[in-house]
Amino acid sequence: MRNRRGFTLIELLVVIAIIAVLIALLLPAVQAAREAARRSQCINNLKQLGLAVANYIDRNQVMPVLFGNYSNLGGPPPGGAWPLGWGVGILPGLEQQPLFNAVNYSFGSDNTVQNNTVAITKVNVYICPSESRQVGPWQTTSWTNYHANTGGPASVRTWSGVILPIRSDPNNLPGQTNASPAANLGPLSLAGITDGTSNTSCFSEKLVGIGGSTPVLLAATANARRCAFPSTLGVTPDVGTVTSSLAFINNCNALPGTTQAYVPTQWTGAVWHGSHGGTLHFNAYSHMNTPNKMSCFAVGGPGGPPGGWWDAITATSNHAGGVNVVFCDGSVRFIKDSINMQNWWAIGTRDGGEVVSSDAL
Image 1 (tube, rainbow, N blue to C red):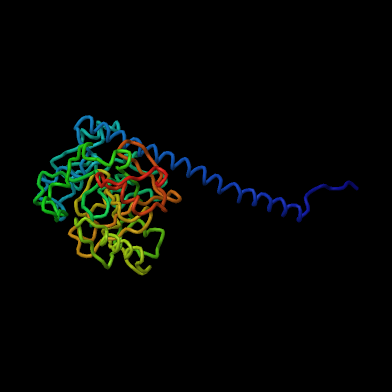
Image 2: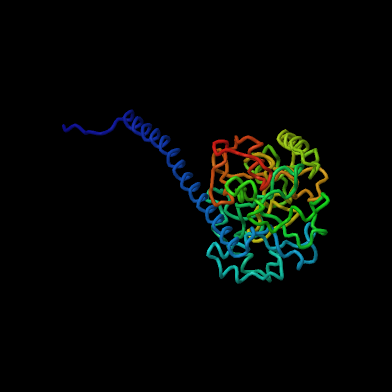
């Protein structure tokens, strides 16, 4: 009789176990490599935004504005329409001249009939490849992960960033409580960035919202960073100190897990082409809370619960350990979640006089 050769059951199980171990070892490496590629593409996107801003400055001698045509929309926000935002203004610098030509400046971004082409167009450079959601909270295609810097702690000064509302109608624009309401508004020239363009952030990342009408609990960590939660403290704006902003942020970070997000804030990043003075979540963020911490809105803020000029509208991303930031000189740096709060505040202001070394970021 001829002997039959083959694997025994034990040998087969050992081979399967070895293969399983190899797969378990390889999968994290493959996932890490993919995330590295996505993060690299995100950096490239932000570099393109930085270059588009430089081109905008060459053409207009000023920085892009947060929103620029609200005077044609029946009154300024909040309460008015959704004006066209900075995402529209820099389109020519992103090689999107035909899309820019299709914009109707007589209407807002929520006038989807009059601005139909803009309302439905997906612009890939405005979307981070590491974003796990593939549809927007309003229009499924025209959403954004990149938000403009509106400034640091509001108790020191509101609108202390670089992408600002226009000052054409300062008496009707909310958010200015000091004696000179037009002083902090745009458009801003490079000469106004006295801290230096390499020390002042221009855009960072923010996870897109989930939409819907069911509130998210803070304990639901998968979606909590996509929303904003009600703090139990207010902020005293424009008083030149960080005291009330610091208390507000500490209160925000200590909210119980049962706290519910305010539903309108679940529309973060809803439109790349629109903005709103009382709903900065659309395409703006603030240097209040440090990266990937909670977003919160202050008690009694004139911007309202959706997130206004003195709320903590926090930069967030799916990159492990931090967020990408493009500075006003066009350079992109990865800012860790562990950054010192004062340093994060410092790079959010254009003329605060702070000095931040590169190794502190």
